[in-house]
Image 1 (cartoon, rainbow, N blue to C red):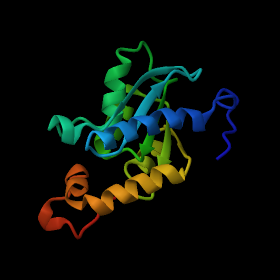
Image 2 (image 1 turned 90 degrees about the vertical axis):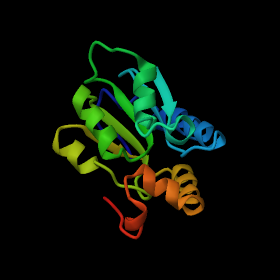
Image 3 (image 1 turned 45 degrees about the vertical axis):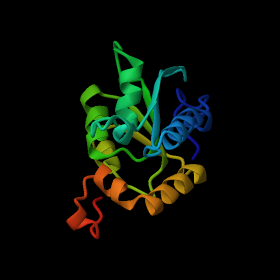
Length: 166
């Protein structure tokens, strides 16, 4: 997707996604859910990067976006920051994006899970979906091999596993 905004036109969104993707690979290698994220300054400088650690840390709040957000530390202003994530943010992470006013979200893929994208857009967040094949393949493979862990991650109880939450 070509970004038409002049203040973002010179950013390498694919390169920024590479940072998040590398984090997702680390999470997968650790035995966790392969979702990575990174928070960038408006000029493309990495402020913090992280990955989903829910399984590894036995912490249901340790999502990729929250891990990247924590790694970035306190910022004076989040409106010009860019959250790059390998997968569409869940409602929990979408809430974090809104709470702190992160201005732009770049998503690697949203085929495996379509979180709060519309809600973010409706509240003025710029949402860019890159449809990255690496991200789609990694998540599809993980979900096929680990459906119970995946359903738990997105809040689907075992009895409701046949239902998908959008």
